[in-house]
Image 1 (cartoon, rainbow, N blue to C red):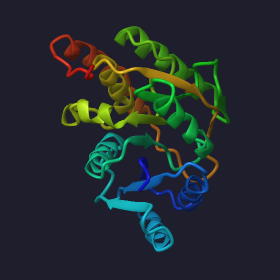
Image 2: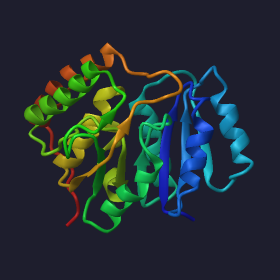
Image 3: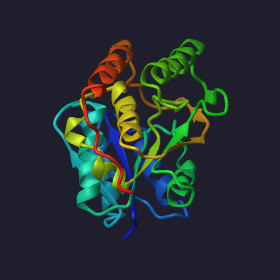
Length: 246
């Protein structure tokens, strides 16, 4: 059995889901995939189920009723990963904005180079974003600067959604205390890992905007992140975080 699990949340990703699954399974390093499917009306789930007949021991699906939020999708995936004894757990989008060929690099950072959490970082070596409007690039880049300033974390890409966790991180973080569901979820997970004493390292990637399907980003998601950072900082002053085992 592979020790590596990629969690892919989906909502209306019929144009991308088969290609991303096949791309991951074509890698030399073996990965399993669990798709967290939020009731896509476009038939995404049916495509995954058809592929399960081809990859019965490597591809899994958890179906939920309706859009319940990115954060809750990942929490479901994290708990499933722990129940099924995976050692390295990855977050990844379905739309190829995260290149599957970078998965082994994130794995290597955790397995061989001392990281507990490896982040596929757009900003650790400048701004490595392709095909985003300049306004969105600036918003994302400045959001990461804002988060870093308020929370005091040494992470250049605080809002990144392409990550690898060692199993111990997800066992230690109190997953039921993670509150944010949207964009701020990514910030909260990094901050919590940081506060628990885990080593967070950034691996430079090139982020390419999706070519197929529709982005799920909105102004409300950025708003949640802006206010959420302040709430995170304030609540952390009164919370004792569980610590990484020595």
